[in-house]
Image 1: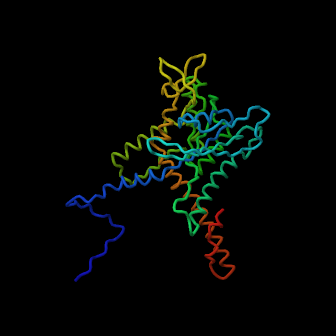
Image 2: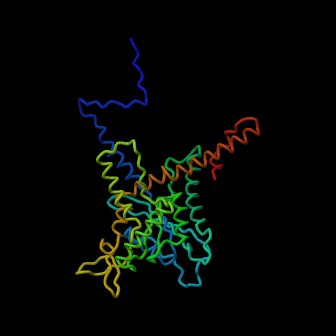
Image 3: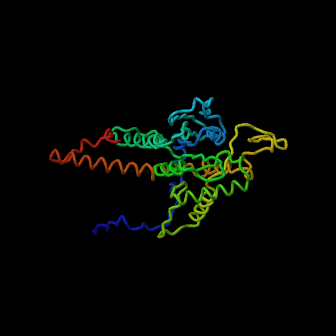
Length: 342
């Protein structure tokens, strides 16, 4: 009896028609039940000068009082260095549990000399990658490694109406190399509509000129045939990219407009409705962060930023191990342990 010819793994499998119902179409339901039981984790970092409304925006985005303001009460209490402060909460919506961790960077940009003020931020992001990698390399590793990696960095730009500061350009570029950066114009209600439009255009030009890679990414592969769904997703992503930086206003207070309570701010010039698209782009930012791209930011962090860090660390580890092995007369594989990861 002739043995079957083995199929080349590189060959595409042929599609065949089933003669009856099998039931594997329920796999999506199985995955959903497992994920709902496990819950999700999302880690967001906010970077910007004191008084930009970072805590207010986060609280507005997730419709809960998650974070107190970290701004000092008195001017003489300004921090001398950038601090890293994280707070975690478990929030639930329609049976979906989300562990949300908000990391603030009080002290950023508040000093006369801000040289290297970004170092604690970059160090913290890399430390989360390093901690995850060490747990991955542990022989008796946990079944599910807690994910503390930063999935999104909201970078707050002062509403000056002029241009990005040299510090903002430097820090955005450095953070974009290790995390997903999403620039937002803070307190955009301090600008007129015309000023806001011109300011957004100027920032976009500077971001492109300085090669700052903002999320979402548009990596185009010429040899890939796109489906109709892929084209729609790419168009939606381009719409988001055209909107960056988001001009936002945050508020945890309710004001009454035509007998209806809405989140907003009352000023002597009128009422600003946070969720009114004609007033600001908060709704677009919220939908982007929570309703359309939350999972993609998590996956992009793992497949792009963490993978780049992981590859660099393992290559360095291999080279150092090879050098040690050459001194001892052979490779010392035992030294390739989790404790060797920076």
